[in-house]
Length: 211
View 1: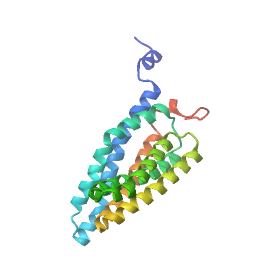
View 2 (view 1 turned 90 degrees about the vertical axis):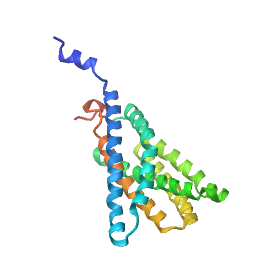
View 3 (view 1 turned 45 degrees about the vertical axis):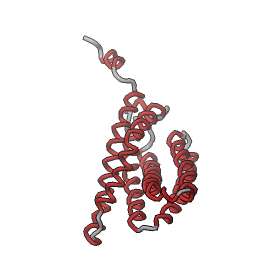
View 4 (view 1 turned 30 degrees about the vertical axis):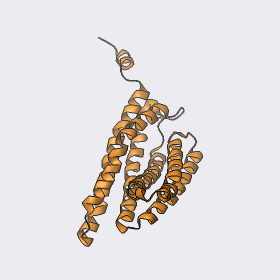
């Protein structure tokens, strides 16, 4: 009968377990995003009589659009990073999720105003692309202060780009959907950060840290 050590050697490596765990938490974060968006939209339907389901379709489209890339990114993050403290991971996750929620839903609005041509391109695409690149880089940044600065720069670019495209649309429903997407993204990011701080088990703790 194989010893425990032999069985462990035949199993998944700690990095592979962490990658699998991060992908699993992408599922959880997506569910958190959709649940938060649904709950935040209910008051608009109950008190204002808005057709919130049309707004939810846009948010669901954004979540579906990013789901597969997010799974791949989650696996890559799991392979290349170690665990961090829960408080740091959830704070960073909420910040990243909020920026992604604002940027992603602004992109959906941008698709609607795209027929306006060059103005729509200039108002959103360059800043949004740079914001997304900074956000991706922040996910892999090892130094906490650098990561915080990258997220702050990404958030500023996303805010300006999103505000510009919302000004082109000029609709209250579009503005409400982007704000709700931002809050829902923060909730999803918190959930993802919680999973980030756990995935991989004790073997993936930074050197020198105990369990």
